[in-house]
Image: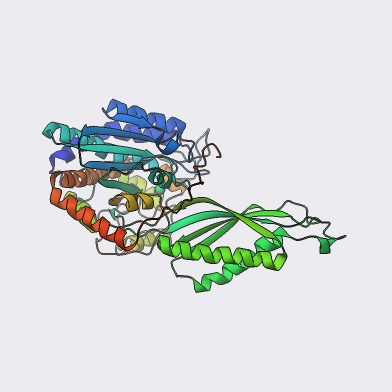
Length: 470
Ligand SMILES: [Zn+2]
């Protein structure tokens, strides 16, 4: 790691305080829209570091934003801090051992994501203040990334409207560019309504909502062969109509999660799923109601920003880990399969290598992986030119949403990977602030993409954040 830049020294000076901050978030793992203690910790850290704090963005009580500086441009750092259910785990322990007192765990590393993004924001605003540079730095503490799509609600509410660029990162095991290859998705609840009757005495008088749901699933399963290969359709029964097989079930709700490459394909695929639901009602003489629960957009890329971020990552080089970090990473790798480890390399476009359990290389710029899932950063990237990176905060092969990820969330590996990413983000923000020509190119790239495919928020206006429903 070549620690040459002044701003990187500024990140290092703040590093220990922000690692402690990320550890405190890890200590209070809270789920989507219920991050009340974590958002207080975030607010407190912003105020201690001299940010002007705004709460309750888009009417979401667990969101927070800190701003520093005056004038423009506005450089935004996106942070997250929600945890996952059922993934409680003791820190620094390489076997599955839940923590006492909670079943939640920071198994996606969002304690680090928020910590690293706020560290970058703080270092950049301190650097600007020293130089007397105009411009504003913002840290957005975005709750409910895990299935909650809070950023999509925030975009719909105009929270990012005056932002010039947005920067973020995600913890992982191999560092490199975060390719703009995520899927747009939406969750829709279909409720079938039929007529109850005695299933033996008067089955001919009943109309089964459960039959309709099952026929819808059969239709959707036949649809799979005839949809784009990267599209995904998943479903789960929310209410299967009760537990009495001697009743013809009159009301059944099934949740569909539909994913596609982009918003246009998503809209087309959702229409086909809706048609299948209608088909199921025709076959069963039932009716169907639907309710959109959430939606996110695919990530939009931005070439000038991606080039700038990658140049900083390459110039900085990989983080330097300590001998005890390698020892712990080896212990963690013993709990993973060879397939887990190989998959991590392949997903990043890096040839699998034996030996080091920690990432010592940077994934290539030109590799384009298949879409990996969905993120609500997608909607921000349509509203504002956005770029992200993958950080190396855990043993290679560690899966996101696993106890192993929680176990490493306060480790030396995690801390070094987080500080490293803060340097990459801070330097990228600095480059855009210093170079109006670069900012013009960033904006032109964004405008050109939007002209081809205008943004339509995938969330209907009447869908509200599910606050207090956890
Ligand atoms: Zn995540």
